[in-house]
Length: 383
Image (tube, rainbow, N blue to C red; front, top):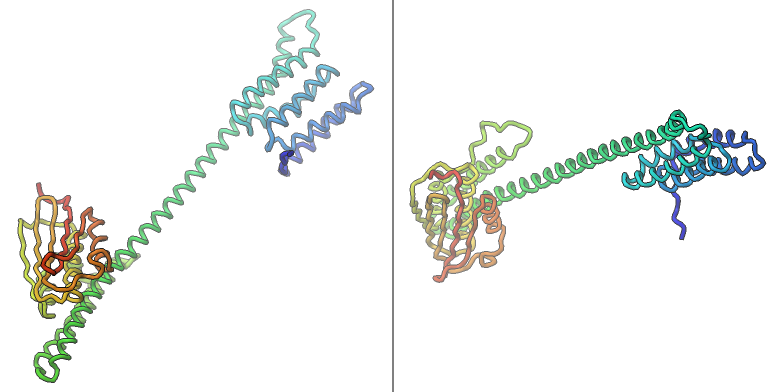
């Protein structure tokens, strides 16, 4: 199967046409009975230059062969096509290929030119004539090699720029996905916890509405308070995720471990007794770790309210030299959904811990309750 030659560029075609005219005119002026053959060979070699960018080695072989043939057989030398062939070889072929083919071409043309020189008497000027005719060919090849090197450098720069652009887009997409996941965790934790408390309080109010209006009124008050707190916490989240603007001072800061007690009071008001135990000497934590620790406790207690059928929960906060450990255990009789391996809340807790280089353990206890334990490394811990 013959390989397609491809379509030459308009510029290469125009240049080949110009050399066709020049080479054909020179060949037609030769004093020989076979001048028409010379014209055909000159035109054929010149036409092949239209494909010099696509097939530099083949075009070089044709052009140098025809040029050498003219010199050896008919004592004619028309260097225009050969100059362009040497340039194209350096510009479009591999460097090693160009060096080998160029050396062979110089030998052939050197023999052709030497055949036309009368070496009697032998003088340096005749060597100079030979070198002078070959030197432009070498210069053309060197120029082509420089052009090829520059083109490869520019292509490498463009490829690197394109790669950096792709990496930038990938990083931006990854950052956007991480931010969306973070916002989803925050909204889930805020809404799920406060709605769970509201559901528990509403159920209690409905149960005692007729028999104990005072308790029902207190439950309704707790519902209103919890709803307002939910709105405040959502405003906190909105204050953090606003982009392109400075964070307004009207948005309160995100919750920290210092605000655990109000959280536990809210849970206690919903009917779940909660004990908090702190061990170790507290030290300053990063805002991200403070928020994540608070949300883990919040989500664990939310799951207890929603699924645990528990009466009592125990929260332990321990400050170690290189980590903060959290443990939330309840005495419920029903396991959490997915036995600790599924559920949006547990997934969110695992994501929070993983982002800090920590881990979460969540599983039923041997006595029937449920245990959530978080280990959060603290690089900023005092040594």
